[in-house]
Amino acid sequence: MQSIAAASSSAGTGLLLIYLAVAIFYIAAGWKVFVKAGEPGWGIFVPIYNLYLVCKIAGRPEWWLILFFIPFVNIVIGLILAMDIAKAFSKSSAFGIGLWLLGIIFVPILGFGSAQYTKPSAVPRY
Image (cartoon, rainbow, N blue to C red; front, top):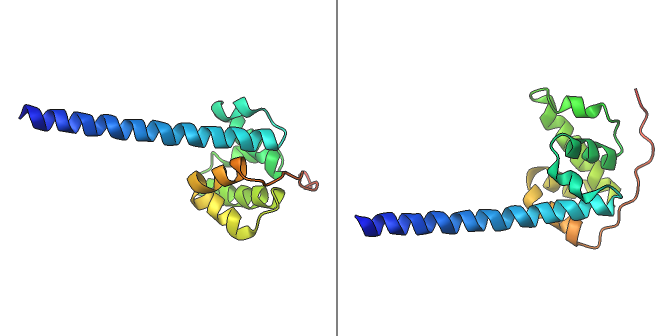
């Protein structure tokens, strides 16, 4: 009985370490994306402020932040922002969909890759 408990404890610890390594890698990639876009990297740690920075990087108005709090609308807004961010980094719309669906893979490509940020053209403010 004790060997089963010890084995499951070791497996749990191993999974926790893998999770922490992936989380730190993703945070570092997000930090790099923010810095490439001329925003403070530490903003990745501040809830709601990081969404504000994402809207800013995508070239969308600040009030779009409110749309993240509306169920189902937030899904569409997330897709639009992912597409805009991909465009701001001179990537394709397919990359934008990948950024939306598989951020854990595509954010590090933006952060650690050679993609350069170009400020989006002005989006009309309503």
